[in-house]
Image 1: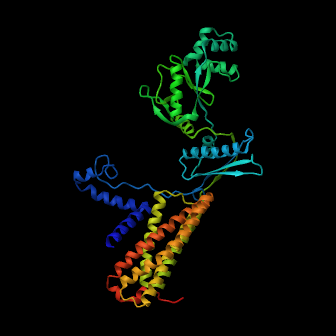
Image 2 (image 1 turned 90 degrees about the horizontal axis):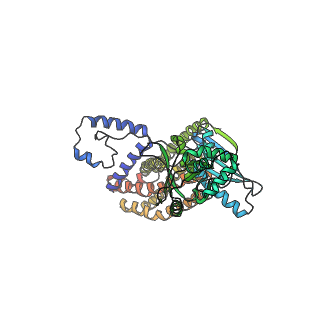
Image 3 (image 1 turned 90 degrees about the vertical axis):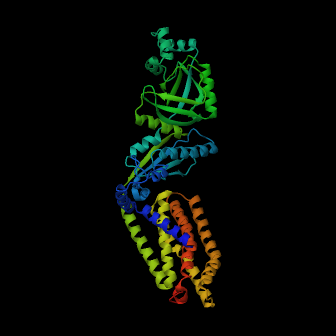
Length: 500
């Protein structure tokens, strides 16, 4: 019992420091100030394998915390975007449903690249099946246009191989009679001719006279990342295809040794490297004199995938954080008053047992807030309401135990340790069933609802789990420990003071 309580105390103290990073940083600064005057043994320094506590000069120091609670759109502010999906080219209902689901998945991946925590992406259907709107809510975004640009881009990556020589020469000469044969070959086979090729393509109305599409497209792309050319230091985009794409890439490069392969993004030839040998493994690079911002944007959009259907922006709304600050302050005030009221109620009504429940409640709140930061859970106003509600439920199990303990003492149980043990053991089935029913309700709410209701269900469910731990583990071990002291002689202190 003592070991478990010591571990709980250490966990609670650690959780409290996580809950209040400012307090932790203050403690860390004072500890680090003391460590500076100590000559830490090298054996202690070697224990820090992952480099968390040791600085660059191998001095052992506590790290500074930069953790903060993740706030939702209603508390932090952000942007709300509404898009209209164009399903006019899809006639079958199944095709429309598949396209809408794929659209939502792609948009979710794209907004994740913006660094938004817990973005909300919802599909809203109108009167007809083809009337589909996409609602995107992004917390913390201060530049709506950046979000619109990132979401609305539709990158399409494809690899093209050069046409047979007579074919592309004839096409170029037909489009530009003043261009000689050598110039036509140069335009189609060398990177120098890409600019001239772009002019010819404009004359052709967008048709590519030199290259023909292959089966290899961004559909088979496994990942894309920004890399640096080890020889030139220029930024490039490293591509890795899946197994099918790797086989296609190897087949295409084997057929085009000594010829260029055009890498085309959104209809524009980014680069056209010449193939020297068959390329196995499915790795390729895109070069094109990118800036870091351009390279990251292209890589992110390639990873997210192309939009399955066109979308157009209908409305955008910037939501300021002023209301959120007021809501947080009001919710914090309500939470403090609620906790104090519950603590006062438990102490006044159950005396010594109520005091133990208060200690357990402190453990519960510290661990719950720490978990919210560590998971992390994005807090909305509804989520805060779930936390406050769970505070009242946290002592529900304690009340059942205390009432059962009163019955055990009333029945003449002289051994307080046995009385406490029986009270918890016989109350556990009722506590378990009651909390499981609440957890099932929270799970159903989370699974079938959207937006803020999910935040309420998540924090409520997590609070119920933590309340079961605090009541049936923490409170139990505290009471069992005190039952072995002289306090076991004063049985009236363990039971209800007032009869209500």
